[in-house]
Image (cartoon, rainbow, N blue to C red; front, top):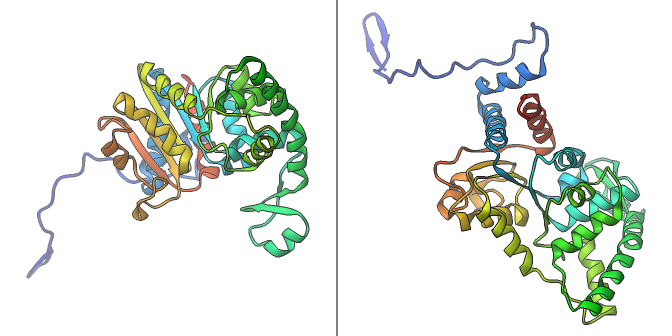
Length: 328
């Protein structure tokens, strides 16, 4: 600014009056969830990014894109599991990518529940009591005993079948067998099996399920699992789709495997990320959608947004916003 005798005169600026005015929800009016979520569009900061994520997800569905949903295991540790299960049950998504924890915890919860604990619970005391902590969620050791009892007979059956036919199953086929066996409508994998929605787990050995596969391999040294078949399958899904959309909850290997498949079709047509990771350490978890454009994982022209925050808060809200839309 420059000063005159009459006061300050603002520097000449671009006319931005055509842009939306910043305004949040007025709580003096009657509350309406749909209108409240719509008000995020003009709230600014991450609220506006969230509103954009809702709009992009609606567009994926409206344009009948093949939707790839990736999620980290803590989404299943938490109550976000129920949101994912709903989407799979109602066939709103068409392929899942997760970690070993995302597989095993869905099954374990059908056998015995996880419980709410505290972020501040002391690790030494929990260890002595046989309780594992994931954030503020407690997972007692006995849950894994139930899981082992459930999984081992299935592995034995699959091994017998492998010996008989010579066919080596993929990780995805193993997951499908587990989904068929659990026979519980609360399960993501149950509905994935029932609705023939593929579930990919590129890091299947990294968890309790991997431990059981390791012990199974010690008993049957000729047991094999084909990890290349799933890569072929997810790439073919991406290649054969007219349009693809990716929704990535959290980061890590699930996010990368989901996005990597999109390279073969020169990028996804829609993209929504929800995570709290920073891009400044160069990790794939924190990488922005624009960084993915540079790799050919997302088309440069694709509607895309990253919502920076806790997916346990944001994803159920996003789902609520999408389901308010009559086309969902």
